Length: 133
Image (cartoon, rainbow, N blue to C red; front, top):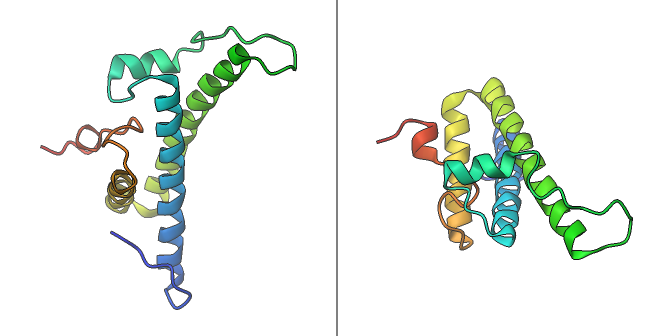
């Protein structure tokens, strides 16, 4: 459902465009972090490992930047963004319904693929999520 956000577009169309853009940006950041950390979010076991609060908690308490601290910050950001995305998706379902949310997610994934990401690099399996066969 590619949406057009021209100034002449209806308020609803502009709103859907903003929603789609937000989820695209969120998913792209999640995918980039996963790639940087060397994890595949396509694998449920790996996703569960990422979400473990004990994952790579070796960050020093000092304020100086060290490789371990930066790595720990990336893990924390990835976990936080995954939780945030869940909340955003739930909010979208509440606001516009399952069908429109599905279309937004499908278009967001299509845009990510156009940008060079592999399908599911952001941890969303659309087939499983929407029980497609």
